[in-house]
Every structure is written in structure tokens, then in C-alpha cells.
Image (cartoon, rainbow, N blue to C red; front, top):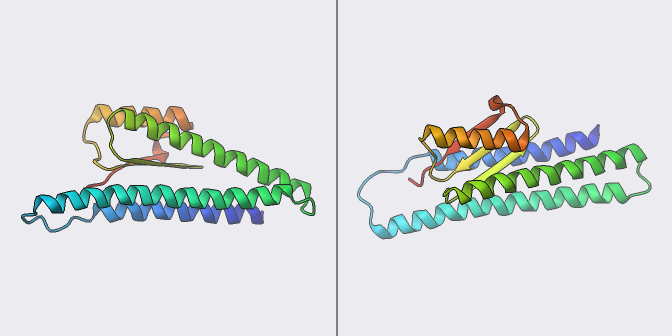
Length: 163
């Protein structure tokens, strides 16, 4: 359906933002001698990028919600389209709840900055400091599988660095 394609396009745009976000942090900078102030600026910039992503995700979700709500309430639109719009609105709310739950639990476990994106067929967990600890990776994977119902092959845990 046209509605599915439009919403899929928005989902792909959000996924592309997540990939660009991860790539932006994976580029390593010159590792010369840097002053302490430089590290403070980088840490601040890093936190700002996570916050920027959250803000953009929120704006996209608000746009999706407004459009779907308008479709759902438009009596001139066929009933099956209105029902589909209501279902998609419910799916967005479910994904938002999953993302918030996973992000909150990981923050409580000490991960300073984390962003989670959930889509049908994929989940991305982006951690500022990453993790090389097998037990922590296993915990994160188990948490994501339990909260989302996705399979392990659909989950990516992405560590990004400040340098």
C-alpha cells in the first residue's frame, strides 16, 4: 500500500541517520598530543551528537504520528486505510516503548550514552564507549531479544569512540 511505502521510507531515513551517526564516530582522528580542554570539547560534542539524534528521532516520530492521526481521523479516507494507520500508530508506540526500556536499563547499568533504534527486522544499539566485555555484550543481546522479540541476527551492537 502507499501508506506502507511512505512509512517504510521514513523508517529507512531513520535507519540511515543511525548508520551515519555510527560512522561519524568510527572515524578516528589524529592521535597526537591533545590538551585536556580538547577532550572536554570532544566529550561535550559526543554527548551533543547523541542528543541531536534523539531530538531528530523525536521530530520524525512526531511527524509520523501527526500524519497517521490525520489519516485515521479523516472520514473521507477509506476505512481500511484508517485502520491500517491506527495499526501503524500502535506499532510506533510499541517501538518507542522498547527503545526507551532498553536505553533506560543500559543507562542504569552504567552506559553513559546509548541510543536504541527498533524497526521490523532490525535493532541497533549504539553505545558511546562500546563494550569489549563478553558478559556485557551477552547481557545487551539478551535484553534486546527479550524486549523486542527479534532474532540475534537482527541485532547490532555498535560501539563508538570520541576520537
